[in-house]
Image (tube, rainbow, N blue to C red):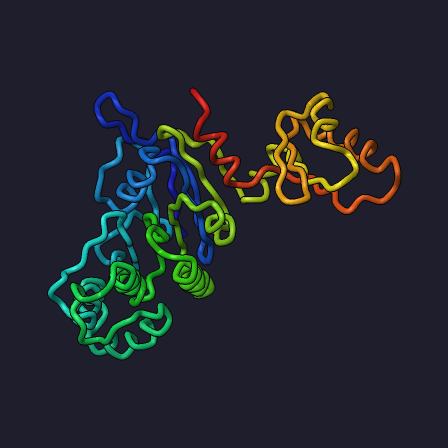
Length: 297
């Protein structure tokens, strides 16, 4: 279990992270979200002792991370780095050895991991000869092949197409099932919502949202409405509390000032009886990200 308590870091007059706290249990995934410069990478570096905190504590299974613990850590930094003249096997064996895994074990496991990530290449191919996407997959394999118990992934989905992003999601979920504590950052809110058990959003170093994806969405109320009915866009615009309307296909999408407005629209829409669709939900995580990221302090 990873427990971060009241973590704070200042860079001169600039705020890095302020009073950040969270816990990630074994077999749990936390998504860390926020705009560029919000404090995500700073958080990762403090967890790993790559950057000293000004105050607060980071505990792994009840104690600060020790050199011995690093063999159970898998870290994918935002700044990717591979030795391009090495072969795939040489590269992965080297990184795994830094985490205490014997070369023979890595060589035995590597073909299975190559298949899992659908790497286009042979073990003897040099990194420089791989496509950018396949290079990224090799680095992901090097991060995970020693089956770490604490996994920290900084923008792991960056640059991956939907098919390869799904392969990564599957691997993250498999590591979760094996009991790993996982924290990752991403700007793709769909990935975050699908994978994460809990979320933490930073804005200018401050925690502004924290909880499960469902609980965070519910904080904003059922203020998004999808409607197919006899009511026209012009008629709906006259309802007090309707702040925005767009059309897509044969449906109208409404933003409401408060969820109670939906009841009035439902009554009007069903005045003649059956309607094809009325769906009232909280805003999506992507909408919430845009709302909170654009908020002023």
